[in-house]
Image 1: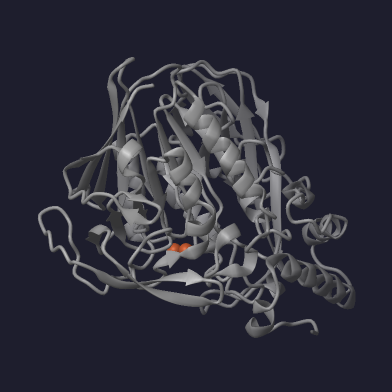
Image 2: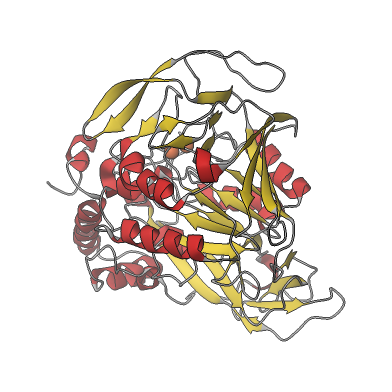
Length: 523
Ligand SMILES: [Fe+2]
Ligand SMILES: [Fe+2]
């Protein structure tokens, strides 16, 4: 292969192999051109010095200090977003973006908006993307400068008090004394009622604004994003030849900040998060933008607990037969970690419910992507083994809820309004991929609250190695072709009682389309 690659050539390579090719090709071209922008050289040099081991490569190899002049007063921070540290009762990671290099970026935090604490210096994570090496995703030609530089600023605060509301402001040299950028509340200690929300497949659109602001209005303790976040990687095949413009992220972070600046935005990786340009595993950009418990070298899969609920965020790209660019990249580490993590959560006497979320659907009848055999093969048996109560997926841009399943078989019909007992009836799988990107469809009628249209079976398929395997599905209970999200209210009970999760589907106007209660006896 020369300096350029066709999609057909790229498909034969893993993401790590494509990244290796890209690094060599970029290095060759830069030598021929006699050098490119300082940022790109710094980032490229660091990359070339890095290891080719996808599992251990750190995004920190991409980072370098800002080299330009101070942006001062004309550079306005934007795109603030927060995420839990390893302990949601005492840690929060706060991030934002600036358009140009700045001096002394900082965060100040307080439990009162009236008086700020000391300045905490921000960590700068810079992404440098040579424009000549990406394909624009619209008809607008790429113009100067030659390299797109994006500056993500991060501060993780520690030793916070449980159940306490904090306010924060951000700034840098020349931009100081500005108002509250956001506020957040740490997880309480103990078993308190709380709410969380979830969706996937967002993008930048007016529907995405609607669902994101609906999250804000619902005021959840945290939000689960099931992947396909901005669609800056527009094609979603995990190929170096895919359409990609990193500036789409600038628009997405601006759109999301109203909610994500105050609600922990806990992201999972979709196929559109595989960006072959930065690191061998495709997640160099992801680690520059987001905070994951364990830092920039941590796996993109993780877990946290909030009150009586354990939450597990998985990377389904590792098990996707449909889009195999990263298939098997963790070398089995993720499945082993999942087994250990679920065992510990189920053994924890303070945890009643386990919620797992990831991108590709284990069970869906949506025509576009249907079901992912890898999720059934590697994840679902562990969900059965440890009694995972609720699974939330995206990838299919619709809403669908299945009747509870054990071993892929329906145990009971659960129409809207039902109560399900996961301990005996199995796992409820929901697809909530209608956050804002263009909608997909079903090959049977929608069926949801106020518009019930049951069908006996649906012709669908599951993606297996190199093929789509036809199947007839009878467990699909609720189908809605429209934008929306999932909202879950946790009501923990005392010893000997029954805790519940009230799980509802809402459309983008906040109208209820689905409702099911999950009930579990307290240990
Ligand atoms: Fe998507
Ligand atoms: Fe997707």
